[in-house]
Length: 360
Image (cartoon, helix red, strand yellow):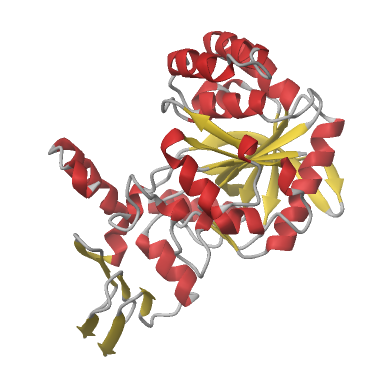
């Protein structure tokens, strides 16, 4: 199995800490290592670093070399232009040294996974399943713990395609967009819905066959790139051809056209760390008490559910606040209701519309 960690995202909901020059996968949000470093470290007990690839934008190359000095530089797959997840996954598929019948796991670089051994075990289950059923793409669906409205869902039916080490692999009935609270509560009661983690496992041959059927223009570009592997022309072919690929997500470009999609229910202590509220929940383990990350000091009197982050050494004092996020960087101060932390993305969109590039 080859593993590709997708590390080109922008993490706008964690602005102003997560910025274009250093998005959240390169930030130390939960300890002494960055999210990307943790994404690699959790794999190394069972997988070789030589089989791990990082897919990202060209501008993050030096950051990845600095963070992952043990990773072969040839395992850094660089996109010369942003074309969404389908072309990025296609490029990684042809540049990773995988045989046609070998599985490739496409994982995330900025998610939290508490149960690391269980996660590695499920990757092995997926690898075994696709080796026996190569026509399938296997997704990893997270067992819901709350009626979450910020995640997409996967509905599975009761048909079990196989059981491996006690883990069932089920047929996907539908992918469902982010629901409102009432619908999310119904999903939780139903028991046949999982959170969509965005991680999946597929053989190289199958994903390339899907590109040929669903995105033929991108497939032609990918075959040109693959033909140039091992030659002096490879980088030139990537630079000139890749920007012409279809700009489309893997969900819309490939997944929604497939009937052979399976899902593994995963209870792995997962979060996409998709907002300041999500980060607060991880740090405090659901406690109503306040939490503090960063370099500065925090003094509090009588607050609940407060998250404070500061990059400066100054003291931040809070009094009687409830469910509040305070984030200070060198040039920006964010104060928001924790329950509206998903709206941080709208601030970023507003900054983009006003062309305030230095604040992004």
